[in-house]
Image 1 (cartoon, rainbow, N blue to C red):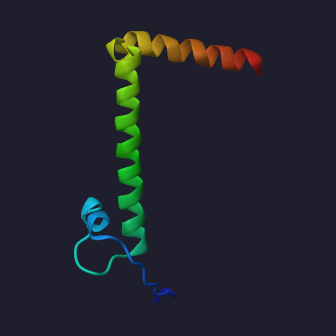
Image 2 (cartoon, helix red, strand yellow):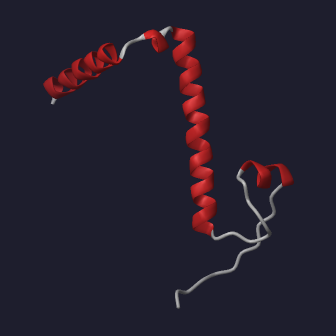
Length: 79
């Protein structure tokens, strides 16, 4: 059996609902995954908002790939 440590953590009901936690117990690894996924969603929402505000959301995949290629080339040239 793996050594485990039991820790009691208090969270608000709204937070429990936000992360979709059912019941009163959750493995740390599962909680960690839920938090990471939530942060990733928040960051993606923020990035989409910025892209819309700056006009980047109108770029085609070809344009985006070209910018990525040019950026990588400049980085390689510096090294």
